[in-house]
Amino acid sequence: MTTRQPLRILSLLCSRQCTSSRRLAAATSTLKADLRWSSSSSRWKQRQGRDAFSRGAKVQGLKSRAAFKLLEMDSKHRLFKPGQTIVDLGYAPGSWSQVAQERTRPHGRVIGIDLIPAQPPRGVATFQGDFLSPGVQRLVREFIARTGRPVEKVERGEEGETMSYIDRERQASEEREGNGTSASVDVVLSDMSAPWDQTSGYMSNTLTNPYRRLMNTSGVAFRDHAGSMDLCAAALQFASDTLRPGGHFVCKFYQGSEDKKFEARLKKMFAKVFREKPESSRSESKEAYFIALKRRAGVVVDFEDSV
Image 1 (spheres, helix red, strand yellow):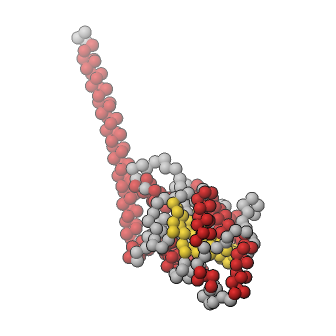
Image 2 (spheres, one colour; image 1 turned 90 degrees about the vertical axis):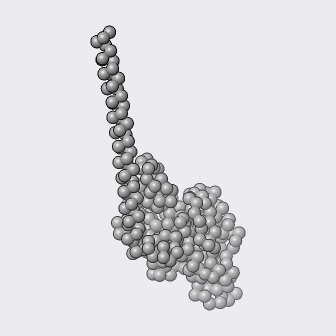
Image 3 (cartoon, helix red, strand yellow; image 1 turned 180 degrees about the horizontal axis):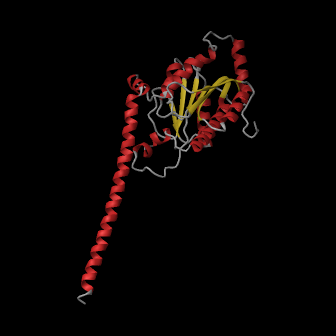
């Protein structure tokens, strides 16, 4: 009995010490993770502070630095005109809608769709929902048809001159022949990013915050590329259904093996197609943009056909 007692005490002491060691190791690991994610967040804030476009957006009251990408593309390709109807897919936080609203005044109409909630810019109609859902797309198309085209757009041509009765009838006829639907949208914009499942970094605001996580890539190049091409395809299908002849299409993609095939589809549907990487796009990012100008009348997208 006397021999077993010290052994029992020693065993209890070892057990408690091992438990304390495990707790200490777990706490140390958590602390290191917190410090790592905190460091990552600090680096992001420092980069934003040094970035001229981020500072410019803040000074000019823009929702984000992404506004400068669209401003640059519009300056080069003249996407917008007063009185147009614009659909902005993946509009949050709203900087592209801000630019579109400003460039289509007066009588312009901007409709934004996004999965996450965001305060829309003044004058922009928005839908919160998954754009890939057929139901959401149907609601957007019904809204566009119900609210109609701006009167000023119907009465004036592309350069702003007054249109004759014959010209107005010809334009309406072209739009009816475009794809059999109410093709009344002038520009479809897509700056959508594919959501990805979070498996780590739950202590990081950069990853758990839905705004930041949807704006960031997953870090897996093929996954980001494939997801972006799926979204481009969905946006192009929507444009095929709603874009009038002569209308324009802009979409973001991450470069990879499938983008040439998508570009070939765009060239069938539009008169001119360009690839752009705006100056305001970060140099280390693989993002780029397709700019497709002047939709051809009577041409619709068909993803079943091989290119």
